[in-house]
Structures are given as C-alpha cells and as structure tokens.
Image 1 (cartoon, helix red, strand yellow):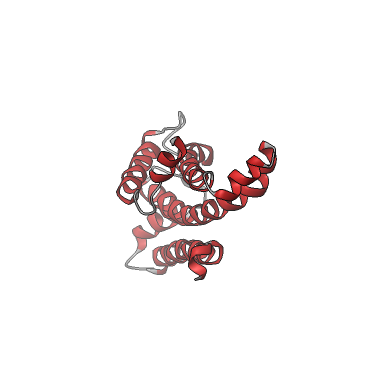
Image 2 (cartoon, rainbow, N blue to C red):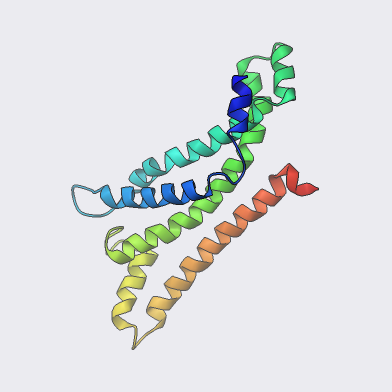
Length: 178
C-alpha cells in the first residue's frame, strides 16, 4: 500500500512550477554564498548548491522504477541489494540523471556568465565569458566584437548542451520510441 502511494505521488510534469521556484531559490542561494576573500563563487560552492536537485531527480526515478514487476520478481527470486541496484535500478535511473545533468550544464554556463558579468562570479583577470562580455561593454561602440563574440559563444554553448540533453532524452527514453 505504501509503495502504491509513493508511486502515485510521482507524476510526470507535476513539478514544473516547483522546479522554477527551486531554480530561483538556487540562484538566490548562489548569490548569498560569499567567499571571505571577495564575491567570487568557486566551483565547489556551485556543486554544493546543485547536489540536492540532482538527488531529487534520482529519487523520483528510483521511486517510479522500484514498484515495477520485474524489480519485485528479482527481489522474490532472492537478488541481493547490490544486484537490484546494479542490474535493475541503475540502468533505469541513469538516463534521466544524464539528461538532467546535460541540461543543467547549459543553465550553469549562463548563470556563471551572468554572475561574472554582474561582478559576483569569477573576478578579473581570471578568464570567463561573463567577464569578457562585461569588459567588452566598455568598448562596445568602438569594437562591438569584444562583447558580442563571447555572448554568442555563451548562447551556442548553452544551446549545444540543451540539444545534447534533448537528444539523450529521445535516445534513452523507452516511451519515446513508440
């Protein structure tokens, strides 16, 4: 009974508004994390902020696979916990995590560049696309390419990772193969 309640609470598309709220919360959290030496964010701090959202994806995927018949059959046949994880749960949990991670990389590229542009991320002289756009803003009328080329590269990189995520979803989702 408890498994049915957990499986019924996992509905595709039910967390769209909640994920928007969480992502804005994560950006605010990134802004509030400060380094004692200045406003720069390190990659470790960014990873700490993003771990809970990846954990949610794994949990939802696990809860949707766990009550399925083949997992119950393997458990009834005496499969160990390691075998259940390695042979039955992991192959079904890994694809959504890969799709989420590739899409998240694109979002983090844009967020990192935005924070650096505002002066809250990586500080000059460390090279960063956001810093390059921010420095190019000063010479925009004389040399527009100094700001536009890094901006275009940010957009292309973010779109590329989003397209990789879409391709992975289409390739790894068994429901999309119909």
